[in-house]
Image 1 (cartoon, one colour):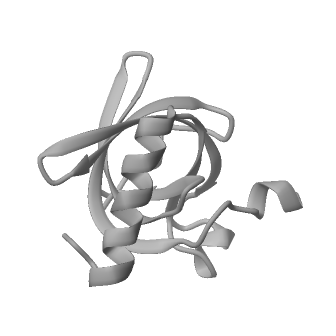
Image 2 (tube, rainbow, N blue to C red):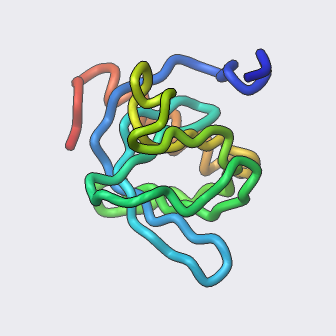
Length: 122
């Protein structure tokens, strides 16, 4: 994996929230393990393979209490259950935020600040 694929902008914070991910006609709900200003790590407790591959563009709706934060992301990494990588990393997939306006980024940063100040919110 290249250095640029593993770098992130900002500290990761642990969270247990939900996102709706859409790509074309496929729309699924995932849980969020952690997030930062530049991306999220998503997973599901349903035993199945992840349908998205690195490079796939997704539209996400991150649920934050009574509102959602809409983000355009690209799948950066997939860790499949039972894969060699799953022995040292959690299963799921990491996404990098590629499009969010200033107001959206402000809401995301406010969410991260609340988590850091109060611990897990959900």
